[in-house]
Amino acid sequence: MDALAEAALRGADGEELLQHPAPAEYLAAYTRVEDIDMFRGVADKDVRKSIRVGAVPMPELAPDEVLVALMASSINYNTVWSAIFEPVPTFTFLKHYGREGYWESRHDQPYHVLGSDGSGVIVRVGVGVRRWRAGDRVVISPVHVDDQEPATHGDGMLGQAQKAWGFETNFGGLAHYAVVRATQLLPKPAHLSWEEAASTQLCASTAYRMLISERGARMKLGDVVLIWGAAGGLGVFAVQLVKQAGGVAVGVVGSEEKAELLRRLGCDVVINRSEIGLVDDRDPVATVAAGKRLGSIIRTEIGEDPHIVFDHVGRATFAISMFVARRGGTVITCGSSTGYQHQYDNRYLWMKLKRLIGSHAANLLEQWESNRLFDMGRIVPVLSEVHALAGVGEAARLMQTNGHMGKVGVLCLAPEPGMGVTDQVKRARLAEGRSAALDTKIHV
Ligand SMILES: NC(=O)c1ccc[n+]([C@@H]2O[C@H](COP(=O)([O-])OP(=O)(O)OC[C@H]3O[C@@H](n4cnc5c(N)ncnc54)[C@H](OP(=O)(O)O)[C@@H]3O)[C@@H](O)[C@H]2O)c1
Image (cartoon, rainbow, N blue to C red; front, side, top):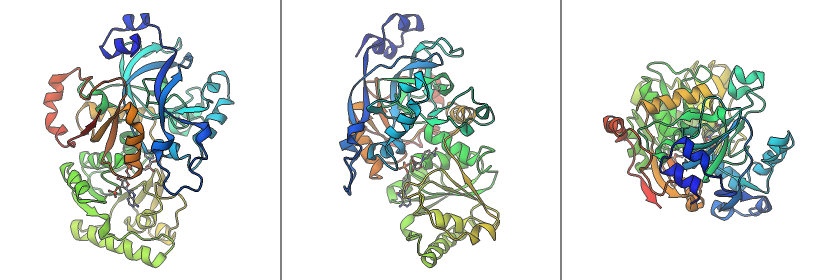
């Protein structure tokens, strides 16, 4: 470990951190441009084959950026997309971005450092950074915006230049260091460990915007919310948000183990998707039959249809989501893991006056509000596994094969789990809430 990383890990103050030189290279998990055709014609696109872990050059720091010594990160589904080079190789994003100017050209490399979550210590600040300094402990928003673009000030997600850090940009979070914009920084909750804190940004804030924000479904007290994939990365936070906001959570899962997790999180109704019998969305009769089976289970349990359907599964569930939402209800989607060319019967949308909303990540204020809920202990991290940086391939494979629950953590500079807690009193006070989390499997 280099001297700067070692100082950041032991909690050195900003003054000392600034005295240690930044290393010329750092360890990172990345894909390589020469591999983008490696899965052509291959049925099992095993991400362990395309994710490498090795040294990459340290980039120059732009005036509005900070260098973070990363203690931990977590796996998101976008790392799976990057590592299978679908729907487009992420090198295409880097190439286009790289054409925009001098600082942007740093991102266009033959390697792509992946990862859109992170927690760590700021070790350098660009000359244009005002609110943050070396030594600050932070979590990182995955949303990379141009704060000189007018639309960004209405909603950060609506700026044309908005990008997902570590997916549409380089220098992501699955590494020992990351280069991030000052507009991506949030304070790390003091009672959380590094790996817990690194699991709280991308998925939780996406779920927050989808459910609670005025730009999302605007959930209100008493709403019945159907959550697909409710024990996954988005799902575990959606369930907690619905419960905290006074709603009725109906979670769909694929196994009894996942059902048990949802019960521990307080989910009101848990449905195993084998009870629904999901079908090919090109068969409208079978889709309506599956929608009726699901609707009937929910009516039996709750007595009414969902106000909100939380979808990210895509093709396998979307037509049913559009069917099962109540008259005047809302379907909100942020992804399509099972395929993004959906087919559904539009009559259920217009005749029943439903709303369909597309949602993507969260702006900085929504990120801040979501982070605050973790800080207050209202929502808690749910980590099923923690891997070492060298094991990012295995960790991403777990997500690719749907073998995980909640989030999968990655230790970057932190040598072991449980480090980084600076307020043990608060941690003890909030311990009861945290007991909802899993018994995390450690692979370090
Ligand atoms: N736009 C954004 O800002 C944003 C942010 C975060 C995530 N996403 C996207 O959202 C999706 C989910 O992300 P995630 O982090 O929650 O992933 P995840 O942790 O893998 O969870 C997804 C869940 O989907 C369920 N699922 C998988 N295949 C299914 C099928 N055929 N039918 C029904 N359910 C199925 C699984 O649950 P069961 O097997 O238990 O049913 C799994 O737990 C990804 O496509 C991701 O790229 C988008």
